[in-house]
Amino acid sequence: MESTIAGFGLGLSLILAIGAQNAFVLRQGVRREHVFAVCLTCALSDALLIAAGVSGFGALVTKLPWLEPLMRWGGAAFLIVYGARAFWAAWRGGAHLDAAQAGRASLKGVLLTCLLLTWANPHVYLDTVVLLGSVAAQYADRLNFALGAMTASFVFFFSLGYGARLLAPLFARPVAWRILDVLVGLIMWTVAASLLL
Image (cartoon, rainbow, N blue to C red; front, side, top):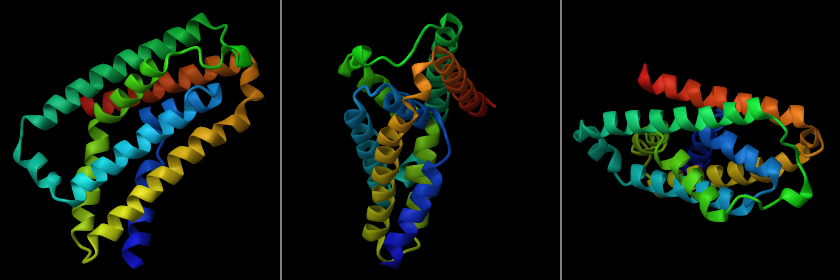
């Protein structure tokens, strides 16, 4: 039980920081657009990465020196483009939450963006594979540590995705969407800058 609680606590603390992936989940939750699929994709991706880290994949990442710069530059490029799109949406304005618009984006497009924000982000690998993997090695019961961290991901993403609905009345106004788009753009570019610097 101690390993499970430790895994849950560390997993939750690592995922709480608002980053590119979390901002995307929040936006989809507010829009009520493919929320279950997005939350499940994020949580399952985290679970796979945590399993890889706990089973020793972190050691492989450190042995391949070319992998880190590739992930860093590719992730930064994607975040810069995605941030620019958010700033463009804020500049254009006119967005508002309308029940008739729900489901406007295709599931395929939303999941592709979600997967890119998850798997092209080097911070995800550092948190889940390297950090959680190295901390799990300190516990005799690594399986329960991993299960605790995975549970934290499921709890967090589904709470964020479905909890965002409480903000729906606020996002009935176009100015709220502009502010959210600016915040998403700033988060994306801040993460990209941290990767490049």
